[in-house]
Figure 1 (cartoon, rainbow over the protein chains, first blue to last red):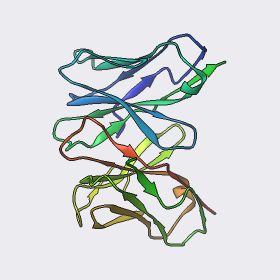
Figure 2 (figure 1 turned 180 degrees about the vertical axis):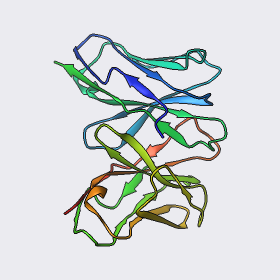
Figure 3 (figure 1 turned 30 degrees about the vertical axis):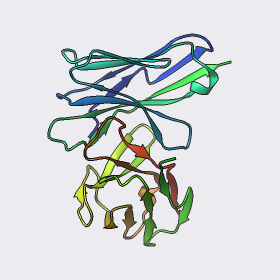
Length: 112
Length: 114
């Protein structure tokens, strides 16, 4: 079942700009994760934020989590053409034994 | 480099054929998963396994079965392939004890049933 929904479905920006993607979910979570998928390939884990954390950084990535609004955002700063990919959020809910539920994804295009 | 390996990148099969998709991981992970990915529908969980010889149905198990005889190998079986099973199939594994690194995915198998 789809728990997460990403917004927007598609995003196109110029190289060097920041890209922000949002994710909303429906139930309580243990953690929320973001993945990237290059065209025709598998997903790659980017970052995990636990339910008791509000913000996390990794390189050019910044993730925020608002459990009261059941939402998260992924910010990619100083984007590059190589960041062009689909980005998915995934939630790990209590009692799910670490079974992730994925959102429908945001297609990011970074124009050179 | 740790990885999940799916046996085929592209596969074309005929309707009614029995199809085996193989997945092997070298990370000693306890958990393994099979998803299918279709445009507009995102990733949908077919089956998963938390241990050898153990399997659990996901959201869309109909028309599929799985086998996990060894910890490192998780096979997805299409008993009688149909055209509506044309899709991208993704295998993933994860540790039962540490969620920090999330899932590790294979590169995917794009299956076409004709």
